[in-house]
Structure formats: C-alpha cells, structure tokens
Amino acid sequence: MDKLIGQILNDRYKIVDITGVGGMSVVYKARDLLENRYVAIKILKDEFLSDQKSRRRFLNESRAIAMLSHDNIVDVFDVNFEGATQYIVMEYIDGITLKTFMTEKHILPIDDAIKFTAQILVALEHAHERGVIHRDIKPHNIMLLDDESIKVADFGIAHVSNFDTVTMTDKAIGSVHYISPEQAKGAPTNAKSDIYSTGVILYEMLTGQLPFQSDSPVTVALMQVQQTPKNPTELNPTIPIGMEQIILKAMQKDPANRYENAMAMFKDLAKILADKTIEFNYKKIYNDNSTKVIDIYQNENNIDKPQKNEDVKNKKRNSWKWNVIRNRILAGFAGAFLAFILVAIGAGFMFTFVDKFAEQLVDVPSVVGRTILEVRADEKINKNFEIREENTYDDTVAAGIIIGQDPADGKFDKGKQLKVIVSKGKRMVTVPKITGLDEAQARVLIKEVDLYFDKILMPNDTQKEGIVLKTEPAVSTSVSVGTPIKVYISYRSEIQQVFVPDVVKKTKDAALADLFKQGLTADIIEEYNDVVKTGVVITQIPSADNIIDSGSSVTIIVSKGSISQAIAQGTYVEDLTSSGVDE
Image 1: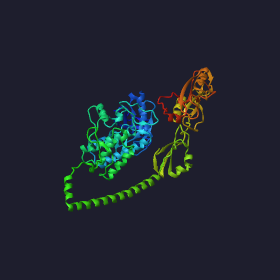
Image 2: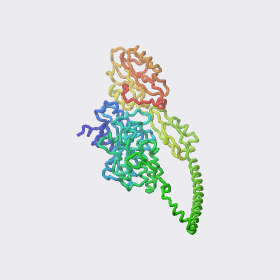
Image 3: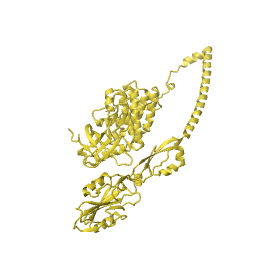
Image 4: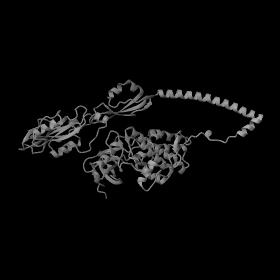
C-alpha cells in the first residue's frame, strides 16, 4: 500500500486512493474534510523535490490553471510548495479519458466528434485569451464525464505569458503523435500549436487512426515536420468534405495557414453541425501523401472539352437549326444580363449590410493599469460596453487598480460585456494570539497567516526565557499579509547587546556596512516595489534602535524596482528558491 494512503495533509485532505501515476507526480483521490467533498491531489514525487526544474514545472502547472476559470477546464482549489510534500489540489473528475472512449468506439459519429472538439476549443480559447498555451493537447489529457461534457487537464508544460517556464526539452515537448511541427522542431509555440493538436484529435476521432504512426517517437516527430497525412476521406469516406477541410486546415504545417484562433475553428464546426453538405473556400489541402496541393474549387467550366468545330459548321449549314441556336444565344445573353443586374443589386445590398455591421463594431480599449473610478467615469467606454467588475486580492498592486480584462483586444459589438478584474490590494489578516506562548509556537502561528516574525529580545526577571511578552501591532489587530510583526521575547542573558542601526532608505552596500560595524550579519530579500528605487532598502527586521544579541542577523528587504516596468521589459522573474526570511 502507498505510504500516503490514509494520511491527512495540512489537517484537511485525507488521502483515499491512487488514481494515476505520471513521470513526475502521483495523483490521489482525497476527501476534503473542510468542504466535505472529493478532490484530486497531484503530489510531486520525492525524487523530484530537490530538482529545481521539476519544481518549477510543477509550480507552472498550478499557476497556469489558477489563471483560468472555465467549465471545460479542471479547477485548482489549493496548492502547497513548502515542506517535504508539495501538491496541487484540483477538482475531482469522475470519468474516463477521451482516449479511453475513442479506443472503445474506434470511429466516432460526426456529431459526437464535433461536440467533443467544440468543448476543447472553447476551453483553449479561454486559456489563450489569458496568455496560457497548453502545449500538450491530447485525448489522454482530456476527461470525459458521464454527461458527455469534457474537462481539459494537465497543464504541466503550459507556457504562461510573463512567467519563467520550463525549457523546451524532450520532457516538455508534448506527446509526439499530437505535437505540432514547430514543437517537433523545438521552435517557439503559440496558440496555433494547440489548434494543430486539436486537429490531430479530430482526425483520430473520425478515422480511427493517428495521422502519423511509427514504432519510434523520433520518427513520428520527423513525420510531423516532413510528411503529410492521408486525407481523412480516404480512411473514412463518410466524412463530409467540409469536415475534412476543417481538419486539414487545422493541421497545416505552416502555422500561418491554420485557423487564426480556436474560436474560428469552433465556428466552422458549428456550420458543419447545422449543414453536413457545406464546403469552405479553403484553397489548399493535401491531395495525397505528398506535398502536392490542389484547388478544391475547380470550376467545371475550366475543364478542357473536345472542340466540336465540325458539328458547329454542320449546324450553320442548317438554317432551321441555326435559328434555334440564335434564339438560345439571345435568351442566354438576356439571362446573363439579368443575372448581372441581380448580382449588382445583391452586391450593393451586401456592402451596405457590411458597412452597417461594421458601424456596430468598436475597438476594445486597454484599461489594465487604470483605476476603476476612471473607467466608471469614462463616457466612451460606458457608451460602448457593459462594465462588469470582479475583485481579487493582489499583493503587488494597490486597491482600485485594474489588473486584467476580458476581452483583451479586438473589435466587438457595441454593448458587449467588458469584464474588468480590480485589485483589492493586499489581503488582510489578523495578528494571532501568541502572548504567553514560547517562541517556536509563536513562529508557527505567525507564518500560518503570512506575516513576518520580527523577534525583539526584552529583559524580564519574572518570565522564563523564550516567552512572548507582547506584539506590535497588538494581537487581534487587522494587518495586510507580509507585515512585520514585532514579537517581544523574554530573556535573561549576559550576552553582549547592541543597538540595531537604521538602514532603511540606504543602498544595500551602505546598509551592510552599517550592520557589520555593529557586529551584526544580514539576510537579504529582494522584492519588486513601484516606489523605492532599485538597490535601496525598503524595510528591515528588526527595526532600528532595538537591542539584540551581537552576532544576530538582521533581515533587509531591498527593492528590485518597478514590477510593471519589469513585466513590460520582459525581465520579470518569480524566484522559486527559499528567500531565507525568518518567518
């Protein structure tokens, strides 16, 4: 039996059973004792705990899914990246993988294939709009529920905009049978890479076969780059021409020839669902297992036909027949003229309609970085869009500042809903009741509510050493997360005491020099700050003029500069390593 089964993580999640094992992690079914529900917990294997790349990939998965909230994407409820057990708590899916279902059915009905693919596409559209590229779309990573809804899972090698992600290696390349040509070559990926993989899944659902197969993964990867698949209708003649066009457009080698986005492919599938006979004006598709392309809309009038000059001469010799031909020609000219008039009228109507339609489209403004008060007062925005606000805590952005929007850009109908995500500032917590406890207990309670432990020794002849005498701010006070809490600890020591110098607003080098003069050491933490210049001390723990033991360590928090500027320059990096803060 697995050693974790039966154990309770974080006094909340009771491990029930193993549901899956991957290369880096094990997925367990667990009972959330607080919410009284089943959850899935993905736990990083012990052998990867010390591997920085594995930990970064594991964090990247939680970060990617945490940015998303969609009915067709697995939800993340909780994460833990401290201690000996690192895990992600996710929505528990009681179902099977789409791959299992496809294997059982072999070839799926057209409507079922459309239904499943459409759900994948709307999930991808939601992720792509938020800068998340999955990079490992395959039926093994898609869960199918009893009600035939699907959930996209396993964002382990996802690319997240503005974040450091895993390097493209053989472990991060995705599954070779479903990867795009650019992934197979190790080239940069984007949303169109996920569209290619979705096309492969649709190909497999309707033909019962993968487009490229070999015993060697390397060979399959090369085939993705160099070869073209058989037309789906060669393997399954019942596939509508329009559906084949959709599949092959999604699977074009050159990303520029694929669908612009997931929603464009979704719209074509919707048309096929409504009318199986529809065909699209996509000029280039694969003709056979080569690189040859053909025009799928050849005009049959362009096909060479035998010339029948002799017959024409014979007809001209026959006056009666010539009269018939002449009348037909006149009738043809009349019909052509009438058709021209109708087309001209139709074109005029169409252009008028398009112009009227275009008048209803407006550009989505960028509101990220503006205050919600400004946006509420902006008459142009309120005239064209319905503003919907969502609020969330953010430790780096002041309250009232907009940190996200949906849609982000493009042209949309007037009156469309514009969702803005507004920062609530830092999350507020209460200073725990630690007076009278020993130092070790106090540290645990302070850490649990995401506050800093600022130890200050205070002489006391009535209490034993190491007991909390008081705190500043006082217990039960509401403060923002990350606030240093001065914790006064009793002592009876003959150790030499020194005053802590004031190093706030000094450069890091000057601060270190002042501390060393007093016989103190330093722990350095670097944080982004939009106010304090790069390399300048933001705050210190303990604070100035406190008396501490000679040789003690003082934590100084040094500015890394503006976070918004770092993001704009593409230099923003979130460090996964322990900061060394005495929390």
